[in-house]
Length: 263
Length: 263
Image (cartoon, each protein chain N blue to C red):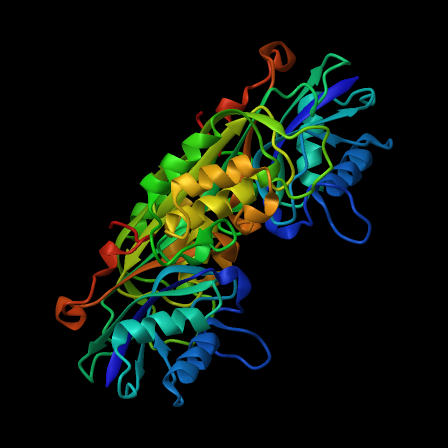
Protein backbone atom coordinates (compact mmCIF):
# COMPACT_ATOMS: atom_id res chain seq x y z
CA UNK A 1 0.00 0.00 0.00
CA UNK A 2 1.31 3.45 -0.91
CA UNK A 3 0.93 6.46 1.40
CA UNK A 4 1.44 10.22 1.06
CA UNK A 5 2.95 11.91 4.09
CA UNK A 6 2.58 15.72 4.41
CA UNK A 7 5.18 17.21 6.71
CA UNK A 8 6.99 20.38 7.81
CA UNK A 9 10.56 20.74 9.03
CA UNK A 10 12.96 23.30 10.43
CA UNK A 11 15.95 22.85 8.12
CA UNK A 12 18.41 24.52 10.56
CA UNK A 13 19.14 21.17 12.18
CA UNK A 14 19.62 19.13 8.97
CA UNK A 15 22.00 18.73 6.07
CA UNK A 16 19.09 19.03 3.68
CA UNK A 17 16.49 16.48 2.63
CA UNK A 18 18.53 13.87 0.73
CA UNK A 19 20.22 10.95 2.55
CA UNK A 20 23.99 11.40 2.65
CA UNK A 21 26.59 9.42 4.58
CA UNK A 22 27.84 10.83 7.88
CA UNK A 23 25.34 13.67 8.30
CA UNK A 24 21.75 13.95 9.56
CA UNK A 25 19.13 14.58 6.88
CA UNK A 26 15.34 14.82 6.93
CA UNK A 27 14.85 11.78 4.69
CA UNK A 28 17.15 9.71 6.89
CA UNK A 29 15.20 10.64 10.04
CA UNK A 30 11.89 9.83 8.32
CA UNK A 31 13.12 6.43 7.06
CA UNK A 32 14.54 5.59 10.50
CA UNK A 33 11.34 6.52 12.37
CA UNK A 34 8.92 5.01 9.82
CA UNK A 35 10.91 1.75 9.89
CA UNK A 36 10.92 1.76 13.69
CA UNK A 37 7.18 2.41 14.04
CA UNK A 38 6.17 0.03 11.21
CA UNK A 39 8.73 -2.67 12.18
CA UNK A 40 9.79 -3.12 8.54
CA UNK A 41 12.34 -1.35 6.35
CA UNK A 42 10.63 1.75 4.89
CA UNK A 43 12.11 4.15 2.35
CA UNK A 44 10.41 7.43 1.55
CA UNK A 45 10.74 9.57 -1.56
CA UNK A 46 10.12 13.32 -1.44
CA UNK A 47 8.54 15.73 -3.93
CA UNK A 48 11.98 17.27 -4.28
CA UNK A 49 15.22 17.81 -2.39
CA UNK A 50 15.81 20.83 -0.21
CA UNK A 51 19.37 22.04 0.42
CA UNK A 52 21.10 22.19 3.79
CA UNK A 53 19.44 24.82 6.02
CA UNK A 54 16.36 25.21 3.79
CA UNK A 55 13.02 24.81 5.58
CA UNK A 56 9.72 23.28 4.52
CA UNK A 57 6.33 24.37 5.79
CA UNK A 58 4.86 21.79 3.39
CA UNK A 59 6.76 18.87 1.92
CA UNK A 60 5.24 15.63 0.64
CA UNK A 61 6.85 12.18 0.58
CA UNK A 62 5.48 8.79 -0.45
CA UNK A 63 6.35 5.36 0.92
CA UNK A 64 5.15 1.79 0.49
CA UNK A 65 4.32 -0.28 3.56
CA UNK A 66 1.88 -2.78 5.01
CA UNK A 67 0.35 -1.54 8.22
CA UNK A 68 0.63 -4.21 10.96
CA UNK A 69 -2.73 -5.62 12.08
CA UNK A 70 -4.42 -3.29 14.56
CA UNK A 71 -2.42 -0.20 13.55
CA UNK A 72 -4.60 2.44 11.91
CA UNK A 73 -3.44 5.56 10.04
CA UNK A 74 -4.11 8.11 12.85
CA UNK A 75 -2.18 5.93 15.33
CA UNK A 76 0.71 5.56 12.88
CA UNK A 77 0.84 9.36 12.45
CA UNK A 78 0.79 9.86 16.23
CA UNK A 79 3.58 7.31 16.82
CA UNK A 80 5.66 8.68 13.97
CA UNK A 81 5.58 12.17 15.49
CA UNK A 82 6.51 10.71 18.89
CA UNK A 83 9.56 9.03 17.32
CA UNK A 84 10.70 12.01 15.21
CA UNK A 85 12.69 14.98 16.55
CA UNK A 86 10.50 18.07 17.22
CA UNK A 87 12.14 19.79 14.22
CA UNK A 88 10.16 17.45 11.90
CA UNK A 89 6.36 17.30 12.27
CA UNK A 90 4.12 15.13 10.14
CA UNK A 91 0.71 16.64 9.68
CA UNK A 92 -1.34 14.49 7.33
CA UNK A 93 -0.99 10.84 6.23
CA UNK A 94 -3.30 9.14 3.73
CA UNK A 95 -3.31 6.18 1.31
CA UNK A 96 -2.96 6.93 -2.42
CA UNK A 97 -3.30 4.82 -5.61
CA UNK A 98 -0.19 2.65 -6.20
CA UNK A 99 0.95 4.79 -9.17
CA UNK A 100 0.82 8.09 -7.22
CA UNK A 101 4.34 9.51 -6.91
CA UNK A 102 5.42 12.33 -4.56
CA UNK A 103 7.79 13.75 -7.19
CA UNK A 104 6.33 12.87 -10.58
CA UNK A 105 2.67 13.43 -9.68
CA UNK A 106 3.37 16.92 -8.24
CA UNK A 107 2.00 19.61 -10.57
CA UNK A 108 3.06 22.87 -8.91
CA UNK A 109 5.53 23.86 -6.20
CA UNK A 110 5.69 27.13 -4.27
CA UNK A 111 8.75 28.54 -2.49
CA UNK A 112 8.97 31.62 -0.30
CA UNK A 113 12.08 33.60 0.61
CA UNK A 114 11.90 35.83 3.70
CA UNK A 115 13.91 39.04 4.15
CA UNK A 116 13.91 40.92 7.47
CA UNK A 117 14.44 44.66 7.65
CA UNK A 118 14.22 44.96 11.44
CA UNK A 119 16.72 43.19 13.71
CA UNK A 120 14.95 40.23 15.31
CA UNK A 121 16.77 37.46 17.21
CA UNK A 122 13.88 35.04 16.62
CA UNK A 123 14.06 35.37 12.84
CA UNK A 124 17.82 34.77 12.49
CA UNK A 125 17.47 31.16 11.29
CA UNK A 126 14.42 31.86 9.14
CA UNK A 127 15.29 34.93 7.08
CA UNK A 128 18.01 37.03 5.52
CA UNK A 129 18.57 40.26 7.42
CA UNK A 130 19.20 43.44 5.41
CA UNK A 131 19.96 46.71 7.17
CA UNK A 132 18.78 48.74 4.17
CA UNK A 133 15.44 48.23 2.37
CA UNK A 134 15.88 47.11 -1.26
CA UNK A 135 13.95 48.77 -4.12
CA UNK A 136 10.86 46.53 -4.26
CA UNK A 137 9.42 48.14 -7.40
CA UNK A 138 12.65 47.48 -9.34
CA UNK A 139 12.83 43.88 -8.03
CA UNK A 140 9.22 43.25 -9.07
CA UNK A 141 9.82 44.76 -12.53
CA UNK A 142 12.66 42.22 -12.92
CA UNK A 143 10.71 39.33 -11.33
CA UNK A 144 7.86 39.80 -13.82
CA UNK A 145 10.30 38.68 -16.59
CA UNK A 146 10.35 35.21 -14.99
CA UNK A 147 6.64 34.63 -15.66
CA UNK A 148 5.72 32.14 -18.39
CA UNK A 149 7.84 29.31 -19.81
CA UNK A 150 11.58 30.06 -20.01
CA UNK A 151 14.97 28.35 -19.98
CA UNK A 152 16.37 28.85 -16.43
CA UNK A 153 19.97 27.78 -17.18
CA UNK A 154 21.16 31.17 -15.86
CA UNK A 155 19.69 30.36 -12.44
CA UNK A 156 20.79 26.72 -12.23
CA UNK A 157 23.51 25.67 -9.79
CA UNK A 158 24.67 22.57 -11.68
CA UNK A 159 25.04 22.48 -15.48
CA UNK A 160 24.11 19.16 -17.08
CA UNK A 161 22.24 17.72 -14.11
CA UNK A 162 18.87 18.01 -15.82
CA UNK A 163 17.51 16.97 -19.22
CA UNK A 164 16.27 20.51 -19.81
CA UNK A 165 16.04 23.78 -17.89
CA UNK A 166 12.59 24.93 -18.97
CA UNK A 167 10.28 25.94 -16.13
CA UNK A 168 6.81 27.45 -16.30
CA UNK A 169 6.56 30.16 -13.71
CA UNK A 170 3.00 31.07 -12.63
CA UNK A 171 3.84 33.62 -9.93
CA UNK A 172 7.00 35.54 -8.98
CA UNK A 173 6.94 38.65 -6.83
CA UNK A 174 7.92 40.45 -3.65
CA UNK A 175 5.34 41.34 -1.01
CA UNK A 176 5.53 43.26 2.27
CA UNK A 177 5.09 41.29 5.47
CA UNK A 178 5.48 42.33 9.14
CA UNK A 179 9.14 43.24 9.72
CA UNK A 180 10.25 42.72 6.14
CA UNK A 181 9.54 41.26 2.72
CA UNK A 182 8.72 37.88 1.23
CA UNK A 183 9.41 36.69 -2.33
CA UNK A 184 6.95 34.06 -3.56
CA UNK A 185 7.57 31.94 -6.63
CA UNK A 186 5.19 29.28 -7.95
CA UNK A 187 6.17 27.04 -10.86
CA UNK A 188 5.67 23.59 -12.34
CA UNK A 189 9.31 22.68 -11.56
CA UNK A 190 12.52 24.19 -10.19
CA UNK A 191 16.08 23.42 -11.31
CA UNK A 192 18.82 23.00 -8.66
CA UNK A 193 19.59 26.13 -6.64
CA UNK A 194 17.12 28.15 -8.74
CA UNK A 195 15.23 30.07 -6.04
CA UNK A 196 18.36 31.16 -4.15
CA UNK A 197 20.06 32.29 -7.41
CA UNK A 198 16.93 34.16 -8.54
CA UNK A 199 16.61 35.85 -5.10
CA UNK A 200 20.34 36.72 -4.96
CA UNK A 201 20.16 38.31 -8.42
CA UNK A 202 16.88 40.14 -7.68
CA UNK A 203 18.50 41.55 -4.52
CA UNK A 204 21.32 42.92 -6.74
CA UNK A 205 18.58 44.75 -8.62
CA UNK A 206 17.04 45.90 -5.33
CA UNK A 207 20.41 47.33 -4.23
CA UNK A 208 20.83 49.21 -7.49
CA UNK A 209 23.78 47.14 -8.69
CA UNK A 210 21.82 45.88 -11.70
CA UNK A 211 18.87 47.41 -13.58
CA UNK A 212 15.73 45.37 -14.35
CA UNK A 213 16.79 45.55 -18.02
CA UNK A 214 20.20 44.08 -17.17
CA UNK A 215 18.42 41.36 -15.16
CA UNK A 216 16.47 40.47 -18.31
CA UNK A 217 19.67 40.30 -20.35
CA UNK A 218 21.32 38.08 -17.73
CA UNK A 219 18.25 35.81 -17.65
CA UNK A 220 18.22 35.47 -21.44
CA UNK A 221 22.01 34.97 -21.65
CA UNK A 222 21.65 31.35 -20.38
CA UNK A 223 25.05 31.84 -18.75
CA UNK A 224 25.29 31.21 -15.05
CA UNK A 225 28.35 33.41 -14.52
CA UNK A 226 26.20 36.52 -15.13
CA UNK A 227 23.82 35.74 -12.23
CA UNK A 228 24.30 37.21 -8.76
CA UNK A 229 25.37 35.04 -5.81
CA UNK A 230 22.92 32.60 -4.25
CA UNK A 231 20.97 34.04 -1.31
CA UNK A 232 21.60 32.30 2.06
CA UNK A 233 19.64 29.07 2.67
CA UNK A 234 18.16 30.39 5.98
CA UNK A 235 15.42 32.46 4.37
CA UNK A 236 14.08 29.78 2.00
CA UNK A 237 10.93 27.72 2.61
CA UNK A 238 9.33 25.08 0.40
CA UNK A 239 5.79 26.01 1.30
CA UNK A 240 3.37 24.14 -0.98
CA UNK A 241 3.39 21.10 -3.23
CA UNK A 242 0.21 20.76 -5.30
CA UNK A 243 -1.21 17.48 -6.67
CA UNK A 244 -4.29 16.57 -8.69
CA UNK A 245 -7.28 16.60 -6.32
CA UNK A 246 -8.07 12.91 -7.02
CA UNK A 247 -4.74 11.87 -5.44
CA UNK A 248 -5.48 13.71 -2.21
CA UNK A 249 -8.99 12.26 -2.00
CA UNK A 250 -10.68 12.88 1.34
CA UNK A 251 -7.42 13.77 3.11
CA UNK A 252 -7.37 17.03 5.05
CA UNK A 253 -6.00 19.32 2.37
CA UNK A 254 -2.85 21.37 2.79
CA UNK A 255 -4.86 24.59 2.97
CA UNK A 256 -6.01 23.51 6.42
CA UNK A 257 -2.45 23.16 7.72
CA UNK A 258 -0.50 25.91 9.46
CA UNK A 259 2.21 27.81 7.56
CA UNK A 260 0.77 27.14 4.16
CA UNK A 261 0.92 29.90 1.63
CA UNK A 262 -2.55 30.88 0.57
CA UNK A 263 -1.72 31.06 -3.11
CA UNK B 1 27.36 58.57 31.57
CA UNK B 2 24.64 55.97 32.12
CA UNK B 3 22.74 54.31 29.24
CA UNK B 4 19.65 52.13 28.96
CA UNK B 5 19.90 49.36 26.37
CA UNK B 6 16.64 47.75 25.14
CA UNK B 7 17.22 44.32 23.65
CA UNK B 8 15.65 41.00 22.61
CA UNK B 9 17.21 37.54 22.69
CA UNK B 10 16.51 33.95 21.74
CA UNK B 11 17.24 32.16 25.00
CA UNK B 12 17.68 28.73 23.32
CA UNK B 13 21.37 29.41 22.83
CA UNK B 14 22.15 30.69 26.36
CA UNK B 15 22.41 29.50 29.93
CA UNK B 16 20.14 32.34 31.00
CA UNK B 17 20.90 36.02 31.57
CA UNK B 18 23.26 35.99 34.57
CA UNK B 19 27.03 35.61 34.14
CA UNK B 20 28.20 32.17 35.30
CA UNK B 21 31.59 30.53 34.90
CA UNK B 22 32.06 28.06 32.04
CA UNK B 23 28.82 28.68 30.16
CA UNK B 24 27.60 31.29 27.68
CA UNK B 25 25.06 33.78 29.04
CA UNK B 26 23.37 36.85 27.58
CA UNK B 27 24.95 39.25 30.11
CA UNK B 28 28.41 37.84 29.35
CA UNK B 29 27.96 38.35 25.60
CA UNK B 30 26.72 41.91 26.15
CA UNK B 31 29.64 42.80 28.45
CA UNK B 32 32.13 41.27 26.01
CA UNK B 33 30.74 43.10 22.97
CA UNK B 34 30.14 46.43 24.75
CA UNK B 35 33.73 46.34 26.09
CA UNK B 36 35.06 45.50 22.62
CA UNK B 37 33.15 48.27 20.84
CA UNK B 38 33.77 50.89 23.56
CA UNK B 39 37.42 49.84 24.18
CA UNK B 40 36.92 49.95 27.96
CA UNK B 41 35.65 47.40 30.48
CA UNK B 42 31.84 47.65 30.55
CA UNK B 43 29.49 45.77 32.87
CA UNK B 44 25.77 45.79 32.30
CA UNK B 45 22.96 45.15 34.78
CA UNK B 46 19.59 43.81 33.65
CA UNK B 47 16.04 44.51 34.84
CA UNK B 48 15.95 40.92 36.05
CA UNK B 49 17.47 37.53 35.38
CA UNK B 50 15.93 35.07 32.97
CA UNK B 51 16.56 31.34 33.40
CA UNK B 52 18.31 29.06 30.95
CA UNK B 53 16.23 28.70 27.75
CA UNK B 54 13.88 31.60 28.59
CA UNK B 55 13.52 34.22 25.84
CA UNK B 56 13.12 37.99 25.96
CA UNK B 57 11.31 40.05 23.36
CA UNK B 58 12.04 43.08 25.56
CA UNK B 59 14.74 43.22 28.21
CA UNK B 60 16.43 46.36 29.54
CA UNK B 61 19.97 46.69 30.90
CA UNK B 62 21.93 49.73 32.07
CA UNK B 63 25.68 50.36 31.85
CA UNK B 64 28.07 53.24 32.58
CA UNK B 65 30.57 54.26 29.93
CA UNK B 66 32.24 57.23 28.28
CA UNK B 67 31.71 57.21 24.55
CA UNK B 68 35.04 57.68 22.74
CA UNK B 69 35.30 60.98 20.82
CA UNK B 70 33.52 60.73 17.47
CA UNK B 71 31.35 57.73 18.45
CA UNK B 72 27.66 58.65 18.59
CA UNK B 73 24.81 56.56 20.02
CA UNK B 74 23.39 55.26 16.69
CA UNK B 75 26.88 54.17 15.58
CA UNK B 76 27.48 52.44 18.92
CA UNK B 77 24.18 50.57 18.55
CA UNK B 78 25.08 49.54 14.98
CA UNK B 79 28.56 48.31 15.97
CA UNK B 80 27.20 46.50 19.03
CA UNK B 81 24.75 44.53 16.87
CA UNK B 82 27.57 43.72 14.42
CA UNK B 83 29.65 42.31 17.31
CA UNK B 84 26.84 40.35 19.01
CA UNK B 85 25.61 36.91 17.86
CA UNK B 86 22.36 37.11 15.81
CA UNK B 87 20.50 35.53 18.75
CA UNK B 88 20.86 38.86 20.65
CA UNK B 89 19.59 42.05 18.98
CA UNK B 90 19.78 45.48 20.60
CA UNK B 91 16.97 47.72 19.47
CA UNK B 92 17.15 51.03 21.35
CA UNK B 93 19.99 52.75 23.24
CA UNK B 94 19.62 56.07 25.06
CA UNK B 95 21.26 58.05 27.88
CA UNK B 96 19.45 58.19 31.24
CA UNK B 97 19.98 60.19 34.47
CA UNK B 98 22.83 58.74 36.57
CA UNK B 99 20.43 57.38 39.22
CA UNK B 100 18.26 55.48 36.72
CA UNK B 101 18.56 51.75 37.40
CA UNK B 102 17.46 48.96 35.04
CA UNK B 103 16.26 46.83 37.95
CA UNK B 104 15.20 49.22 40.72
CA UNK B 105 13.59 51.84 38.47
CA UNK B 106 11.45 49.24 36.66
CA UNK B 107 7.79 49.59 37.71
CA UNK B 108 6.06 46.74 35.88
CA UNK B 109 7.15 43.58 34.08
CA UNK B 110 5.14 41.42 31.69
CA UNK B 111 5.79 37.77 30.86
CA UNK B 112 4.06 35.60 28.29
CA UNK B 113 3.95 31.81 28.14
CA UNK B 114 3.09 30.18 24.80
CA UNK B 115 1.34 26.83 24.41
CA UNK B 116 0.94 25.18 20.99
CA UNK B 117 -1.94 22.86 20.23
CA UNK B 118 -0.92 22.07 16.63
CA UNK B 119 2.37 20.33 15.85
CA UNK B 120 4.75 22.93 14.39
CA UNK B 121 8.49 22.32 13.91
CA UNK B 122 9.18 26.08 13.93
CA UNK B 123 7.61 26.60 17.35
CA UNK B 124 9.48 23.79 19.14
CA UNK B 125 11.96 26.12 20.88
CA UNK B 126 9.39 28.83 21.59
CA UNK B 127 6.42 27.04 23.12
CA UNK B 128 5.16 24.06 25.07
CA UNK B 129 3.34 21.57 22.84
CA UNK B 130 0.18 19.93 24.21
CA UNK B 131 -1.66 17.29 22.20
CA UNK B 132 -4.90 17.95 24.06
CA UNK B 133 -6.44 21.41 24.60
CA UNK B 134 -6.63 22.37 28.30
CA UNK B 135 -9.82 23.81 29.86
CA UNK B 136 -9.22 27.55 29.36
CA UNK B 137 -12.27 28.67 31.37
CA UNK B 138 -11.10 26.68 34.44
CA UNK B 139 -7.53 28.01 34.08
CA UNK B 140 -8.81 31.59 33.87
CA UNK B 141 -11.06 31.10 36.90
CA UNK B 142 -7.94 30.03 38.82
CA UNK B 143 -5.69 32.74 37.29
CA UNK B 144 -8.11 35.47 38.45
CA UNK B 145 -7.18 34.57 42.06
CA UNK B 146 -3.66 35.87 41.38
CA UNK B 147 -4.88 39.44 40.78
CA UNK B 148 -4.11 42.03 43.46
CA UNK B 149 -1.38 41.92 46.12
CA UNK B 150 -0.58 38.44 47.48
CA UNK B 151 2.23 36.42 49.03
CA UNK B 152 3.62 34.23 46.20
CA UNK B 153 5.69 31.86 48.39
CA UNK B 154 3.77 28.91 46.89
CA UNK B 155 5.08 29.81 43.43
CA UNK B 156 8.68 30.62 44.41
CA UNK B 157 11.51 28.30 43.39
CA UNK B 158 13.91 29.26 46.18
CA UNK B 159 12.77 29.81 49.78
CA UNK B 160 14.66 32.54 51.64
CA UNK B 161 16.20 34.19 48.57
CA UNK B 162 14.01 37.28 48.86
CA UNK B 163 13.13 39.68 51.68
CA UNK B 164 9.44 39.13 51.01
CA UNK B 165 7.26 37.29 48.48
CA UNK B 166 4.52 39.90 47.99
CA UNK B 167 3.76 40.70 44.37
CA UNK B 168 1.03 42.93 42.96
CA UNK B 169 -0.44 41.26 39.93
CA UNK B 170 -2.24 43.58 37.48
CA UNK B 171 -3.10 41.05 34.78
CA UNK B 172 -3.14 37.23 34.63
CA UNK B 173 -5.02 35.29 32.00
CA UNK B 174 -5.02 32.89 29.07
CA UNK B 175 -5.86 34.05 25.55
CA UNK B 176 -6.24 32.24 22.23
CA UNK B 177 -3.60 32.89 19.58
CA UNK B 178 -3.03 31.25 16.17
CA UNK B 179 -2.09 27.59 16.75
CA UNK B 180 -2.53 27.68 20.51
CA UNK B 181 -2.79 29.73 23.69
CA UNK B 182 -0.79 32.41 25.47
CA UNK B 183 -0.78 33.18 29.20
CA UNK B 184 0.02 36.82 29.99
CA UNK B 185 0.97 37.99 33.48
CA UNK B 186 1.81 41.60 34.39
CA UNK B 187 3.08 42.50 37.87
CA UNK B 188 5.27 44.93 39.78
CA UNK B 189 7.74 42.13 40.56
CA UNK B 190 8.24 38.39 40.13
CA UNK B 191 9.92 36.00 42.60
CA UNK B 192 12.28 33.33 41.24
CA UNK B 193 10.70 30.70 39.02
CA UNK B 194 7.24 32.25 39.61
CA UNK B 195 5.83 32.30 36.07
CA UNK B 196 6.82 28.74 35.25
CA UNK B 197 5.38 27.44 38.55
CA UNK B 198 2.15 29.42 38.07
CA UNK B 199 1.82 28.12 34.48
CA UNK B 200 2.60 24.52 35.49
CA UNK B 201 -0.03 24.64 38.24
CA UNK B 202 -2.62 26.33 35.99
CA UNK B 203 -2.05 23.59 33.41
CA UNK B 204 -2.87 21.03 36.14
CA UNK B 205 -6.19 22.86 36.48
CA UNK B 206 -6.57 22.88 32.67
CA UNK B 207 -6.05 19.09 32.58
CA UNK B 208 -8.64 18.52 35.29
CA UNK B 209 -6.13 17.31 37.88
CA UNK B 210 -6.95 20.22 40.19
CA UNK B 211 -10.09 22.38 40.52
CA UNK B 212 -9.89 26.20 40.52
CA UNK B 213 -10.92 26.03 44.22
CA UNK B 214 -8.00 23.68 44.98
CA UNK B 215 -5.70 26.06 43.08
CA UNK B 216 -6.84 28.84 45.46
CA UNK B 217 -6.13 26.66 48.50
CA UNK B 218 -2.67 25.78 47.18
CA UNK B 219 -1.95 29.49 46.48
CA UNK B 220 -3.01 30.51 50.00
CA UNK B 221 -1.15 27.59 51.65
CA UNK B 222 2.22 29.39 51.14
CA UNK B 223 3.75 25.93 50.77
CA UNK B 224 5.70 25.25 47.62
CA UNK B 225 5.24 21.46 47.78
CA UNK B 226 1.54 21.89 46.90
CA UNK B 227 2.25 23.64 43.58
CA UNK B 228 2.44 21.76 40.28
CA UNK B 229 5.73 21.28 38.44
CA UNK B 230 7.37 24.20 36.66
CA UNK B 231 6.44 24.50 32.97
CA UNK B 232 9.35 24.08 30.51
CA UNK B 233 11.51 27.18 29.96
CA UNK B 234 11.00 27.05 26.14
CA UNK B 235 7.59 28.72 26.17
CA UNK B 236 8.47 31.68 28.42
CA UNK B 237 9.17 35.22 27.19
CA UNK B 238 9.97 38.34 29.18
CA UNK B 239 8.10 40.70 26.90
CA UNK B 240 7.92 44.14 28.49
CA UNK B 241 9.69 46.09 31.22
CA UNK B 242 7.99 49.39 32.04
CA UNK B 243 9.71 52.49 33.49
CA UNK B 244 8.53 55.98 34.44
CA UNK B 245 8.15 57.99 31.21
CA UNK B 246 10.72 60.59 32.35
CA UNK B 247 13.49 57.95 32.33
CA UNK B 248 12.79 56.98 28.73
CA UNK B 249 12.71 60.62 27.59
CA UNK B 250 12.69 61.00 23.83
CA UNK B 251 13.86 57.42 23.21
CA UNK B 252 11.80 55.38 20.79
CA UNK B 253 9.46 53.70 23.23
CA UNK B 254 9.10 49.94 23.54
CA UNK B 255 5.63 50.06 21.99
CA UNK B 256 7.33 50.85 18.70
CA UNK B 257 9.50 47.75 18.82
CA UNK B 258 8.59 44.42 17.26
CA UNK B 259 7.41 41.56 19.49
CA UNK B 260 6.23 43.81 22.28
CA UNK B 261 3.05 42.84 24.03
CA UNK B 262 0.46 45.54 23.64
CA UNK B 263 -0.70 45.43 27.24
